[in-house]
Length: 141
Image (cartoon, rainbow, N blue to C red; front, side, top):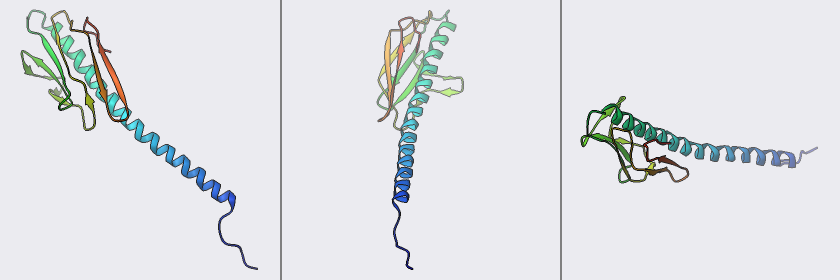
């Protein structure tokens, strides 16, 4: 007796289900990778903003302001004291956020009370975005 060739309906359905699960997993990993990169960049921006604020308050006897500059043309952030970029906590500024990360232009000056103008900074990739808000008292979130 000769066996018929081909696949059974159960085998075909099983393969389709397995391929569907794999394709959803791959798409999910791709999107979460962009989200993680955007969140890491957001954390770097928050660190720089908070560092600028605290450094300005620590230099209370000085009339110089600490500047935070987000540059959209090269997707970098910079901390400046007296107009010169600084190194703080092992990070040398200007700091480039990474390939595919875009940031909006922003320029904030922190005074000796830690205050700055209110601002909103957007950080994004093609698939994910976050916003950092700076209040008039200089607090960033």
